[in-house]
Image (cartoon, rainbow, N blue to C red; front, side, top):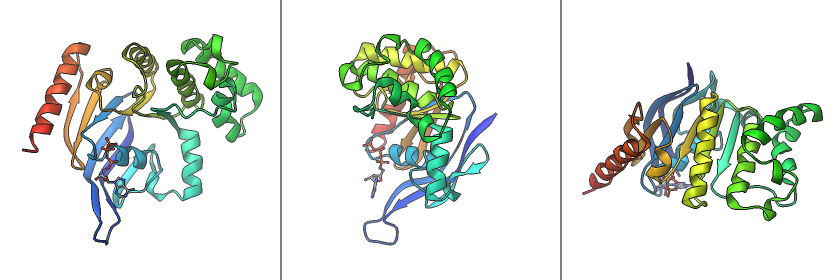
Length: 251
Ligand SMILES: Nc1ncnc2c1ncn2[C@@H]1O[C@H](COP(=O)(O)OP(=O)(O)OP(=O)(O)O)[C@@H](O)[C@H]1O
């Protein structure tokens, strides 16, 4: 079932000035519920711009981004903030946890902002504590735990609102390769439980954990590949080969 549709999406920064940058051009694709899509491309290709538009942090110059029948470009700033808190979860490269709050309170934060009753917050955090293996650190503070543990707390914070869509921007960019694998395995577990995920990454190893990889080049979709029955290694090789042809196309 379709969750997200991008229709002929374009973004021009500083339109009608001599500094105009055409960051996205005619982007059209759909994401189904339960999909796990990674977005790859060289620096400056338009990945962050695309993620910002899907995240309702920015608006397209033309075209539409429709999530669950809601045209995101039509939301006012206030409504976009409410929509984000209710329907989207975010995981960032640098975790973005608040040091002044305990890990538990960091996880509760989006629910506090949504005025969720305490009993409901306690009910929702329990399965996350178990599945993300954060029992031992839940009442400590972000500055007292490792990067991988901080990312687990950040994932719990993103999932506690039970978002339609989890958006991740280089979620393993600050982690060593073993810890990255653990975090990516957690994403896979959540995806197997039905969580839809879109993840921006520079790393083919990271992208190989997803079910589908979209390649962006110069603001356009260059390629769209599916893992299908491929092993992690074979899928990573396919992603690497696509990145090589994408890069070579410059010359
Ligand atoms: N706020 C802005 N104002 C003007 N131009 C911008 C702005 N943000 C991005 N751009 C330009 O839009 C294009 C796409 O940038 P974007 O940040 O989306 O690329 P990216 O693929 O995410 O790159 P990276 O991998 O380096 O983060 C680039 O040419 C960039 O310079």
